[in-house]
Image 1 (cartoon, chains in turn purple, orange):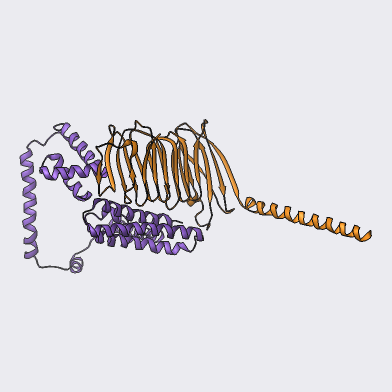
Image 2 (cartoon, each protein chain N blue to C red):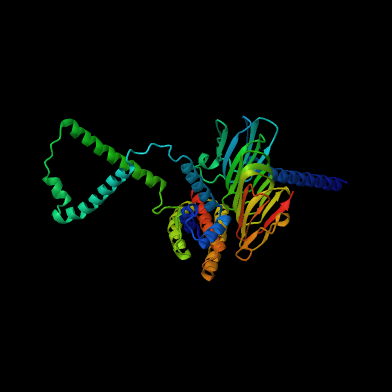
Amino acid sequence: MNCEKCQELIGDLLDGALSRHDELILNSHLEECLDCDGVRKDLASIVSFCQAHRGEYEAPPNEQALWLRISNVIASEKTQAPANNSATPRRSFLSGLMGRSWELSLPQLSAFAAAIVLVVSLATVVGLRRLETGAPPVSPDGPHTAGAASPSDRVWQQQQVISYWNQRIEVNKARWNPEMRETFDRNMKVIDQAVNESINELNRNPHDEVSEQMLNESLNDKLSLLKEFSDL
Amino acid sequence: MKTRFMTRRLKHCACLISTSVLIASVFFSEAVPVSAQQRLSKRYPVGKNIRIELKNISGTITVESWNRDEIRLTATMESPTAHIVPKQLDECLVVDVMADNRGRGDVGDVNFKLQVPVNCSVDLETRRGQINVNNIRGASVRAHVSSEGDIELSNVTASQVIAQNTIGNIFFDGEFSRGGTYEFKSTKGDITVRIPGDSAFRLVAASSARKIAIGPFWNNGFKAIGDGRKYVGDVGDGRSSVSVTTFSGTITFMRR
């Protein structure tokens, strides 16, 4: 069982809604994985807190009527939306904008102009910051968000992030002294070896938990090494 | 007679010249690197529960406790262009070699020696180089080597300890606190943990090389996973969490 699947099932475990078999598998994973065990503990404490403080908040006068009103509103919005789409002819945004008459007072006009200036300047500042810091095109948290993808998918996703940091390293590498360059290359080689061995092991045995853990950790280590050396 | 006298004078001169050359060569061979190095030494009066954050690029970091409410920081810089500006913020001393030398090019090795109060928390980081921490009883100890360098934590008692490197050995000699968390991780290096015989902890140890020796702390409650590449189990009442991971090294537990 992997961590994502485990964390999906923790709620059911606490509710007692799991089968005996699933519960055993989940518990054995929780015994081995400190992260998932931490999630279980957090969730358990939230649930127990809510249970302990149940009834301490004022409920609406007629709870059932309130829910009925909410469900009616949702249902009516659902039915209106397709009806509106089919009944009214589609007007383009531009024709709608042009067809509308605009009457703005002087303060409204000046507020409108100020808002445009603010938005443009903010967008410029954000854009410049991104250029300066060189924010990656994809989320740099590759292995954490990789979830339950297959090892090759996960490695591919990770490669997207890694290639970004590799580019940054290549730009900065010329400034390093030869010893630093050698150190970086040597360490990268060791991590790549760990990644490849884990992938090979997973190809032989796709359900091997230890290799999966090692692969995740090696990919994280590689990313950390790239990030930390890209600052030099 | 005159010829003999001249010969003796020539011999005397030759002897003097060769001795001078020898002395000069010895003097300069020693003097050049010494004069190229810079040394910084500063003292900071602090409270008992101080925290130190040190970010180095390359070089050795040594931290040891002493019986004074002050920190003595000594840095030996290989390059004269290296710049170090320690900052004291409330109960925290921050030394960031990376930030202090941005745009200055290669600053070479900077070797640090820190003498601190025994209850100090330390957060040490370097891209390359060895980290030694001795006789510390602070709340947390973190030693992070991005690439290669050994980590040695001797006589350390803290409720949170993290030691991590890519290539290099990790040695921990200390005590686990009740409810504490301990994480030791290396890609290519041996990890040795030396703790008292009555330690109680929950262990998750993984080594792809299948070289895990739990030694005197082994009990039948340990579960082997992946053909002995990972062991999970409780020692005593398992009141602290210990995670040890190495890809191609050994894991050894020893009694103090």
